[in-house]
Image (cartoon, rainbow, N blue to C red; front, top):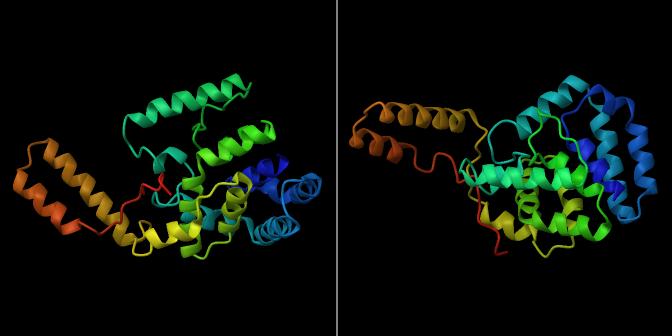
Length: 233
């Protein structure tokens, strides 16, 4: 699906090459057959709106949206395994899939980076690509819901991906689950995470149990859970 390659490209960190070759993305969408006319129009509009911005502004907005906090991270396993050891094995397994498909991965890229995964799926046949999208449909719905909360234009990309997956996971049901979720990209939330890490460090050095529990009570609920169990949806 060439549409997946287009979405992969516009989901990456904005660079000058994207601005220079935006017409090629529009032309690629014309060649594709997987989208409805409305979806193709939405993607074309997103690309046009993105490339109409000043590059530095687009880069700053992207970093704030996807790199500040974990709630909208484009690293897939952040939303499944967090920092657990299971994430490492999942990375190895996914890297094995890429290698079997003949993909050469840059050492700087993590295999669970969504644009990279979409590039991989774009090289598979349509049935495999849909299966691959269905595997991550709950994550796509979660990201779509959070991006809509933040009124980000990037949300349309995830709506299109969910549609292509033909999954029964609904963004609306996820939106209800996260309705009361505190954002993790605010200065207050980031400070809370930093202070929690400091307490953990002090605890490892011999901090008393009572001090740890006081800290946990103080910051309980300051940052909403970042990983939702939506696999059953």
